[in-house]
Image (cartoon, rainbow, N blue to C red; front, side):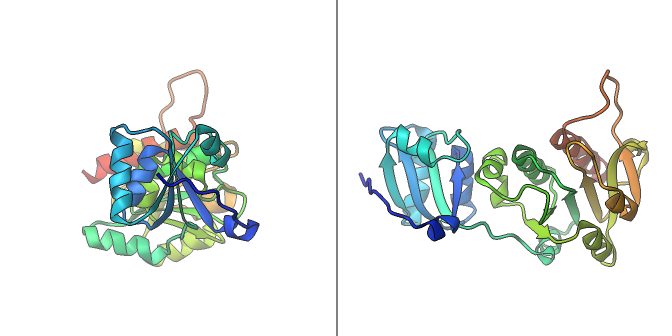
Length: 256
């Protein structure tokens, strides 16, 4: 067993990208992401941990067996499940990567654009849904929104290792740029047209707004459709990640 005490400078720590949770770590290995170091709860030898260890050995990753207190101290999510991996800082994708992925699958581009989603749990859940719904990427703004953190990685259940995430300066201008490349955009809003009545096939961008205020006015004005989800209960809104899931699977349904 290797159990080394590390002295890492503040500057070096800023370059470390932590991946926490068994699914997230395993999928990071399987996707080919380079993992520098792996920290595992000493004495933990169950099936999923053994799978992670096998993947780590294939990459010659340094494996450190540490105490629960040590893992708790290292954890940013508080839910490490006995394993934390250190990788290079997350590398955001480019818009061209989204189109390249769609082209490689022979599909019309499908992206989720998130307008100031601030909760990292929501961001991670949306990335997970995007992956399962076959979306070719997720676009987020640089300011007033969550970036990719250990919490996001954990909430994505490993989907972050497969789904391109692009960070842009201005969502409205990005929509304009993508329109010149043939894409159409549907914005989620409770006052919009019922989603079943909207054509969501073809090259499509689905815009999901902030947890509290929804999609901003400027972004909404750039969209081709304003779509709504039917509501039958006593409250008038869904969690942002749930709304993204419902609408993403309406896109899937129409494409099928």
